[in-house]
Length: 311
Image (cartoon, rainbow, N blue to C red; front, top):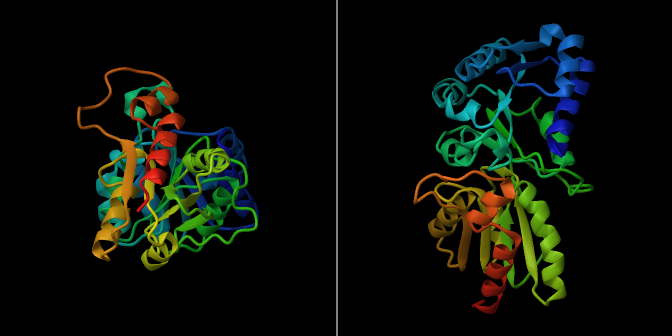
């Protein structure tokens, strides 16, 4: 677990050791690798305490002085508590800080409902000049760290602790394009991100044995290359899966794109629906995925339905 996040942090540490002018600012949230980092590079590690608005403001100030800054914290607080600073400082002045958080969706349910991180994409998609990256594996985690040195935009990097391994070995990663077709399919094309991409790739092998051809698109960076996306999906039915609220997530974004370009693909979305309010019960991540219809079986049922009704 924590593969992509640790790959990212390890690469940041390597870059500092090589002389890159990087500073890590933390809101009283650490990792074992950062314990070593702050001992070896005390002048490159700043803890602002549990104060997310300061986290963003201090990071922006350091960036204006020429530093490459990683604002590191536990999701969802650097976004929800510091939205004003992200909007009016980082984005409005186009300051290229990197906001890196641990925890997407229901990744850390043991810490309670306050740690659900299921609205972050919806919020940050409304802000101009903002890039959102969801690393899928260790390779994307490492590449995101290197990208932090050259990216001219404020960037939000959302780590899923179950995103690990090496899906992107030998592939070209293009954060401006934003997506990769990891598997071709003619019956249904699934668009997803994070650890769900890994899950869907495994399920696609099982569906193939049953005669269902499923394509998989990993949407690892927003905004995406719209024309490239439309060319890739063709006229195939789309199933968009996200561990995020349906309003404003990648499913909403895809529908906006298709509608604005006159595309008529059949589209189905699977995500978190809070129409009846926040969940009143507690459980594991798997419990919440089942509660909101995101279990493996629910996904399989939707794939079978779409493949049978392909137009």
